[in-house]
Amino acid sequence: TRLRSGLRHLPGPAIASFSNLWKIYAVYNGEIPQRNIALHEKYGPVVRIGPNHVSFSTLTAMKAIYNSRQVFKKSDFYRPVSPVHNRKRLYNLFSAQDVEYHSKLKRTIGSIFSQSAVIELESKIDATLDLFLDQILKRTAKGSCTLDMSLWPHLFAFDALGDLTLSHRFGFLESGTDVRNMIATADKIYDMTGLFGQSPLLQSLSMKIKSRRAKTKPNPILQLSVAQAESRIRDGTYKQDMLNSLIEIHKSDPEKLSVDDVAGAIYINLMAGHDVLAITLRTLFYHLARRQDVRTKLREELSDTEGDYQLPHHLPYSKLSKLTYLDAVVYESLRVHANTGVILERVVPPEGCTIEGYWLPGGTIVGVNGWVIHRNAQVFGPNVDQFEPNRWLDLPECKLVEMKRHIFSFGAGSRRCIGYNFAMALSSKLIVEFIRRFDMTLIEPDKPWHIHGSWVTKQTQMNMSVRRR
Ligand code: HEM
Image (tube, rainbow, N blue to C red; front, side, top):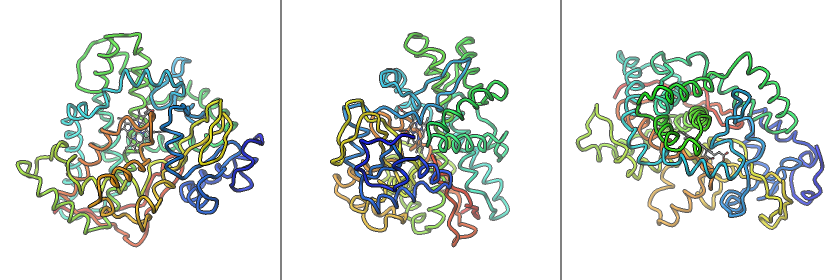
C-alpha cells in the first residue's frame, strides 16, 4: 500500500495512513458501523480511514460526493458485482462504474421501477404476501408459536422479488426454509465481497479465485437470470413481470438494450434486492415487537383508513402510501438501522476537489456511512440510538424534508436505489397485513438482537412468539 502525500494532513487513526487494516479489521469483526461512528466522534467530520480512503459525516459532504455535477464514479469496490458469464462481464445498474453506460441504461430501463409499475404489479405482491400470511396462520392455528423472525422476512423478500422480476418463486415461503441454502450462500457472498473490497490486493485475488471456481460451480441466480432472459426472448411467452417489460424494451431497440443487459438487470434485481429488503423488514418487526405503544397507534391509523378493505382484504398501497404514522414508522426503521454498514465508496474526479475545507487529490476514495449520518442529533433530535417514530411527527414541512434528505439507507444522488418504490411498497404491505392479523413479542425481550455490520448489516437472534389477534 502506498502513502498518499495528498492526504497526510487529514485526521484519523495512525494505522490508516499506511494500511487498510483498520477497515479490514472493522469489517471482519462485523463492527464497521459503530467503529465508523466512534472515529467521527473522536476526529470530527473528516476522517482518513485508509491510505486512500476518507469518511465524511456531514450533509455538505454527502451532497458534494453523491449529488454534485462533478461526477464521482463508483470505486473498484463494486467490480465483483458484475458477474462473469461466457467470459464476459454482465454489467448492471448497480455495479456499473462507467458513468455514461450507467446513465444510458438508467434512461432505458428506469421506467420499470416507477411508482406506476409498482401499482401494475401490486397483485403479485399480494399473492406472495398471502403465501406468507397463510404460513403464519397455519402455525398459529392452535395458539401462539415461536418463529425465527430473522428468517421469515427474508423468505418473503426473496420469493417476492423472484415473482416480481421473473414470475418465479424459489419455494422459500412454501417450504418455510432456506431452499438450497440460497440465502446462506448470498450472505456469504455479501460478507466476502464486503471484506475483500476493503483491500485492492485481496479483491483481485478473490476475483481470480472466483472466476476459476465459476467454471465448476456456477452461481445459480446468474444461471437462472441468463436462462430465463434467453428463453423468454426466444419463445415470446407473455408473463406480467419486470422481465416482460425489459424484453419489450429490448425488442423495440435491441441495440439500446442487449440480451446481456436484460440478463444483468434481472440478476441484479434478485441479488441487490432481497438482502437489503430483508434487513428493513427485520428492523420493522424487531422494533414493533418491542413497542406495544407503536403497534397500537399503527393499528388505530389502519382501522381508521380501512373502509371497504376489512380483513381478510389487503389494504391497497395507494392508501398506505398516504398514512402519516406508517410513514414515520418506516422512516424511523430506515434511520435507526441503515442497511449498509460501510461508506458507499466514490472516486474523486481527476481534477481533485475540496470537501469540508480539505483538498483531496483525484483518485481519492470518499464516502459517507448511513450509520454516521443517521445519528446526527442536530437533524434527528435527541436519543438518536432509540427507535422513536414520534420524531417524524408534527414537524414543519421543511424540517421533514430535511430529515428525509438525510436518510442514506437507499444511498443518494444519481446512484440512489432505483428499487425504492418497490422497497417501500413491499415493506409497508408486509408489516401492515402482519400486524392487522397477529401480535408478536420477542422471546428474550431483554437480550438485544445480533447485528453483523459489514457491507450489509444483517440481524439475527430475533425469535418471536407470534399469535393471532
Ligand atoms: C429496503 C430495501 C432496499 C434498500 C435499503 C436498498 C438499498 C440500496 C442502496 C443503498 C443502493 C445504492 C448503493 C450504492 O450507492 O452503492 C441501491 C441501489 C440499487 N438498488 Fe436497492 N435497495 C432496496 C431494495 C431494492 C429492490 C427491491 C430492488 C429491485 C427491485 C433494488 C435494486 C437496486 C438497483 C438496481 C440499484 C442500482 C441503482 C443505480 O445505481 O442506478 N433495490 N439500493
